[in-house]
Image (cartoon, rainbow, N blue to C red; front, side, top):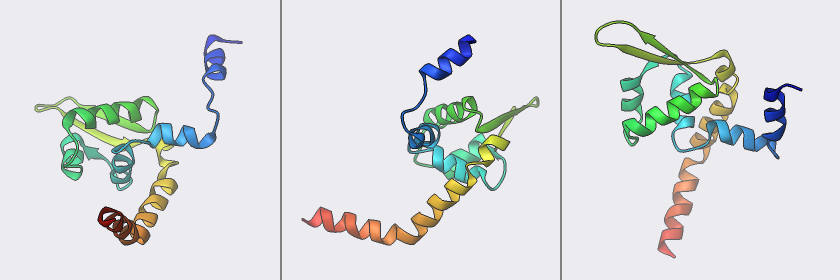
Length: 122
């Protein structure tokens, strides 16, 4: 058995949902992926689409998604440097999940907001 195979066997997840949450969980990854479903985006464009995140956090989240093979980072050798992000073929497999999350949010946004407001009053 190779060292890589040993590491994979030792690092298995106890639940398949944990794999998904590990890859797309967190406050910004799902939003980054949602915006990339419509095509490639430059770093500053993603920053404008996610105004509540910091540059540092956006960079960290993008690096994690790239490390997991979900997104591709393309650096163009020009002045000023241009960097674009896009979904990989592997990342494209997450589109149905991202779109289901979007659909659920559209359907239940008002209910979530009402429940939160009613809990604040109590």
